[in-house]
Image 1 (cartoon, rainbow, N blue to C red):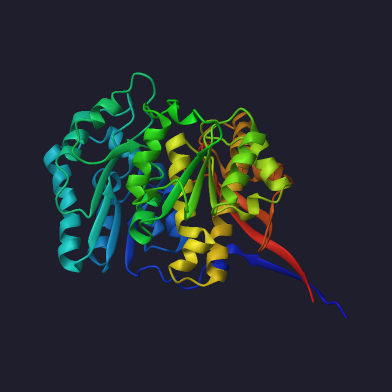
Image 2: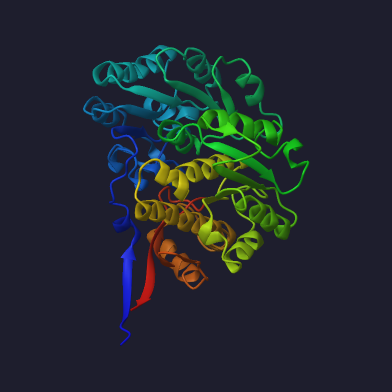
Length: 417
């Protein structure tokens, strides 16, 4: 006799399985917006208590320093802007003196001396014209180099007229477009370096275009990104295919993904638009039952953001690479599914939620606004994964603005036996 059982599984409960990635990895996020805080929710790293990060107000710096001094570990992945200024927004407005900024970096030297661990870090070349103290920020970046296992300086939103690309050329450390994905990229470098990546574009000449917010050709952005992640560009026998969708024809994008799947797991970077995905591409991938099998998908930010997030999550969570690192298949499936579920909801927010709430509610947004927009969104179709049907449970606005939403969700699935 068949017994129908409905199992409601909270995703967080699925991710308590121990991983075989190196223990003792600490992470200091740039801020607590979802892209930067995601590695903390993955439980691959040890993060400061969430209360240390105070939304748009920035980091409680004494509390962060106190936490770091008490943490043993083998590897520290750190945002210098969080540690020195209190976050990305604060790095643009803080009047901190240069000598005080350097003094705050001594926290890293003390941690390294006490733990014997390595430090991988990134400091952002700030967005123009928002940063009031550009020369101070750049002077700090020019002083870096020694004592880091790896250090880089992504530049933030290089629109036409931005000096960021020229400023980057004056630094002796690696630079590239991006910012909010940098923590994820360095996590891949720390935990699973050497991933062999083949890059596939939806159009043969796509790599030559200069994409929005980057200031350099797309192929150069990707080359710098692979170097940041410690990944290796290959043309054959890849561990991972990075499928880059630049827009225009979602059917062509699907064919690019299908081509990649004949070679390796595929991570999709949808860079057709800024801060929102191409809903048609996603609908095709879901309808053809391809989305559920992807290694990763990213469409929430600028091209550099999406490329970095897709690469990092694909390199960490694609099941073959995850299992090669010694992790059980159930854990690999759970982590990959969580990342794909979050990516889907990010597209849903960009396409429907953000314009809907902006048309109806002023900022700063309230819990009431969150409830109303969630009621609007919860009836939208969601994909089914191996682990069940994606079921949104609620959302909130961590910075009380409409740009980003932090989702709560679970999987619901039915088994027969």
